[in-house]
Image (tube, rainbow, N blue to C red):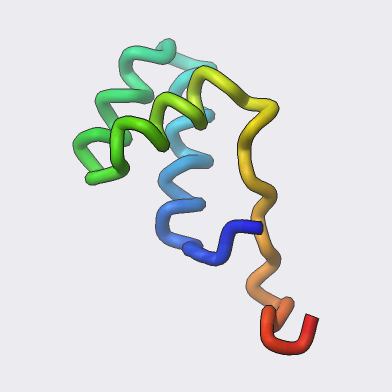
Length: 63
């Protein structure tokens, strides 16, 4: 589960951008935002390996 909500938001934006403008633009976006290349490639090219978003209402200490 993803707990880094800032990166998670960037990933969601890049997926939307990928759908609208293509993988290249989404990859450039993630690179510009400082997401490591290996993560960007995994997110954009292997959607079955994407992490699930952990709800901010769920406290991981008690779950």
